[in-house]
Length: 382
Image (cartoon, rainbow, N blue to C red):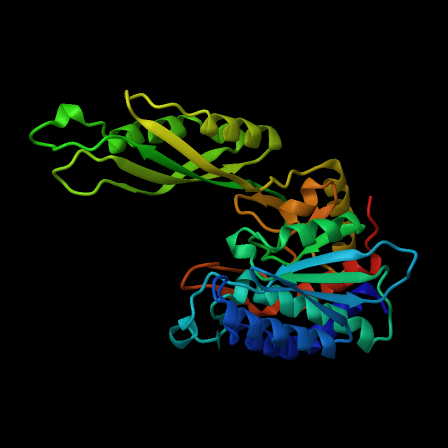
């Protein structure tokens, strides 16, 4: 079978891939809804089973756990780790107002792009080996996690453990515009700043108080001063509040900061600077909690080399593969930070992730499945 034959095969399977995608989207799976996550987990595990996998449910105390599907390959080869997630940002009941639907060249629905299309593509690739009685180059471990959208708190250890045993990691998150892969991602941090001041009557004894909100305003300006856009470092105070009544000098205030960095050095600089914040007002106190929950995915020489090999293989399919970076994080950040060559963005093409117009380009499903299949069949790590 020639590489180009994979595209022909998957074009004939496009409706089956779309049917799988519909089934995944119509199982709502908000990150914070354990009951719905468990239903989606079982649906996904059953689908992997029908694809010929040996399925393990990795339960944990914080939720329904991860689905790990094992597909056999040459025992002497280190596995290929494929990463996905089955949780979404969409709350229970969203499907009623945003049903799965196909309109022209696009398929819509909550989580359709991020990233249930990636799951459908991955399963299609696995089944292709079975349908053609072919073996992948190495065993495949397909891990699908339950909490990626909230920072992977219960999944990180599992991801990192499997990654250390793997030859490389392939992440079926959505592609960049035009189908490009993601060879770099920013690290993601979340910090909570709490200010303690002193309450006083705003009209009678304002001078006896210490305004926590005034201190917070100073802190916010200091945080903005830490940004270094030229180095890929941004900070945003997305949530803030404080005070108890309009006629009371506010004794408490708080803010939550989103930080994004392109390098470990910048992550260390930002974390140290935020934890070193000191009050400017006498009597005020600052407490800082949080940190970086995803290290940056830096474009290392190993990642660059793996991409070049993937690009050459894509060329044999008639696909022009490009690469780029993004400010969002994924579970690929964890594998890349361990030094494991990682390619991200192998999922569907589309737009509107986390938005009302979230959609995939239907024709991309078959081509992305062909690409993933060829990589699992031929890709050699650097």
